[in-house]
Image (cartoon, rainbow, N blue to C red; front, top):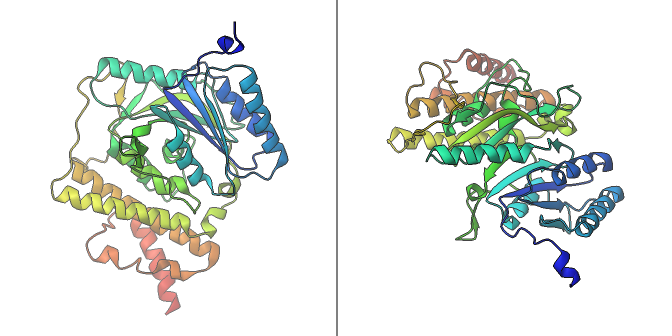
Length: 380
């Protein structure tokens, strides 16, 4: 018998491609993250690691060691490890991973977080259940997450069953504005805004027949999720939120100390989203929107019911998204101004609400508008 006969057959067409981007992640956190993938009970996956030109020797050596051990263990899952020739950024790495992926589904994990051992299994069970009962397309499964140190074990249930969202419902989760900071770990704000901990059909991102991206992460700037998540949800037909703690998130970096407000990218991201929503609203006014409802909702799955009474039609909902996202723009501009004492960020901010495009009837919108107007009047 030849040695090669002892090797398991590599899964050539895996169901899931798990993508992890790494840049100088501390060894202990990286090891937890990588091991949480390799120890998944669900085995029909491939693992793609993109090292974004790490300069930390511990990081690079651990990745090499992991690759060697994976090969020695004769794992049936395909492992692709790629090292960038220079530091290209997270968005580039994710786009690279999507292009190289062979799975029908994509799952992103950050290199300093980690997954529950049953994450992929539970998510894929829901996909199979849905497809067996209903003919309505499902494009995404979102798991709940827990913050590191929260004393909530992974695998804990956080609700009474899965919740179904259409694209409007999902976009409301990332656009709804509240001037009073909420506990994002008690809402779905964090889970919906981030790209990680989601099982997403690869076809949302990439068209294999044409060999081109449908949508891609914006390269060359931070806050890549803020530039991207609205496009992902817009292109999804159906989304399920799974109320189980499937992912541990480490809160750190720029978002831990407010540095994100010192750069202009977060404002630019919200402005790009605003243009996207306003263009969609124009299509809605022309009657070019419409949604199909699932014909058979699997037992135990409920519909998201999160809209104000006045939002009856699809056009009403899009208008709500336009107005709420504009409030986020004003909020992020105000925070940028406070961090940098730069009033130029408010350029043209007072013009649009007066030309009929934006409705400032929301109390919080009115408050922000008056605050910014006062700052600009003090300059004159």
